[in-house]
Structure formats: C-alpha cells, structure tokens
Amino acid sequence: MNMFGVDIGGTGIKGAPVDLDQGALAEERHKILTPHPATPEAVIDGVHEVVGHFGWTGPIGVTFPGVVVDGITRTAANVDAGWVGFDARTQLSERLGAPVVVLNDADAAGVAEITFGAGRGRGGTIILLTLGTGIGSALFVDGRLVPNTELGHLELHGHDAEKRASVKAREDEDLSWEHWAHRLRKYLAHVEMLFSPDLFVLGGGISRKADKFVPLLDGISAEIVPAELQNNAGIVGAAMAAAKL
Ligand code: BGC
Image 1: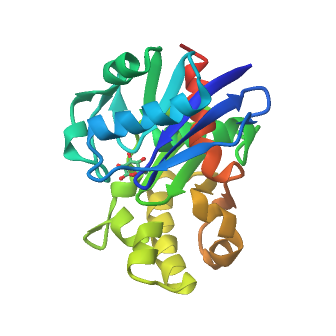
Image 2: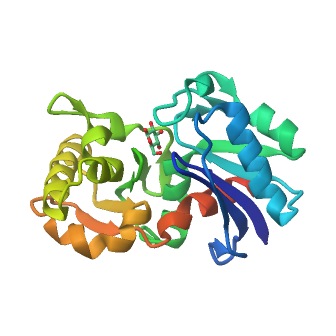
C-alpha cells in the first residue's frame, strides 16, 4: 500500500508517496526550499506544492520541526514563531482537501527507523537523534514511542545543546570533524547519563558521512549506529502515521 509523507524541515520541504510494505519511497521525492520567514501560511503553500507535484489526493502525514500535540504545533525553534499554538492539522487539512496527521519530525524518523531501519527488531531503550538544523529526538522503550521528547534542547555547559552540536553549528562555525565529534560526544554522554539507552541511532543527512565522525565518539557505553533511511526517514514515518488515519 502507498501513502503520502511530507517532511517540513528548517531548510527544505520534501515529500513523496511511500511504499509502506517496503518502508521506501515509491517515487523520487520532490523537494522545495523552506520559505523564509517560515510562517505557517508560506510553509503550507509549500506543502501544497509538494503534494500537488504528485497529484496525490488521499490522507497525508506531515512532520513538523517542533512539538506537536493533537495537531497543534507548540514550539518553533527553527521556524517562524507564528507556529506556536497554531492548529496545523486543521489548516493543512483544509488547504490540502484531505485528512492530515501532523507529528514531530524526529518522532516520525524514529518510527521509520525502528520499523524498517537501524532499530529494526530491537527492544530496550532506543534513542534516535536527528542531526540537522537542530537536534531532534525520539525515545522508544520496547518499540513504544514516548512522543515529543526535546532532547536537542538539553542544556550543555550553559548552552542549548543543539546550538553547539547540530550540523548547522558545525557548518556555521566551520568546525573540523574532530572538533564537532568532541561536542557531539559530550552531548551523547549527557543524554546517556540521563537515560542509559541500549542504542543510539544517529540520523539526518549527515548519517551518510557516519564514517567521518561515529568512530570518534568513544567513551559512550550504548551502541551507536547511523540511521539507515537517512534523509527519507521523516517522509516514511509521516506516511506510516497517515496510514492510521
Ligand atoms: C525542535 C525539535 C525538532 C528538532 C529537529 C528542534 O529545534 O525543537 O522539535 O525535532 O529541532 O528538527
């Protein structure tokens, strides 16, 4: 069965029909740049364009880079503040003319990874971290998601952790792999101190370059593996959520 997923990110809005039996994109994804400022109206226009590209008419899953409770977006660290308290589910559903489910981007990626990717068939405590514009987190206990964890905003040495250890921080500050991995290792050690996970899955586009930094993450007891669905995990997880509508 195919279902449609859209992933709203700080830099791009991307979507595709997803083959839910394979956990893979059924067609090449369509991506547009996230408008700036990323107001609800502008982003919803973008989602409409991405969905329209495929002429999709059925239910749609949409990820959002912030806390989402009952279709309402509650935080907006890397998008316009107009999203705080915004009824995203209703507005998207009206604009797209279809049932819509809205969920946190890292939660969506996590569900996709533990079903089809790096966490497949694993029990215990698993934490997926998406490393991108921000740091997103998805916490699983024996396959069950605890939604809307915001571990990217843990405080580390007096800073919001994602401002120090995200991929954006690496790019903005032009950090070497060693320097960035050092920050990431400190961050993982902090998360490990709090949750003692069995497994860390590291996602986001940077997971393609895992060999450059995962070997540098020493001193962490939990196993650390790169995500397997890489940048498509959010789209796949969004489509999985839409299948439940
Ligand atoms: C947001 C999270 C999101 C993450 C990745 C953070 O700034 O607070 O909700 O999952 O960025 O986009």
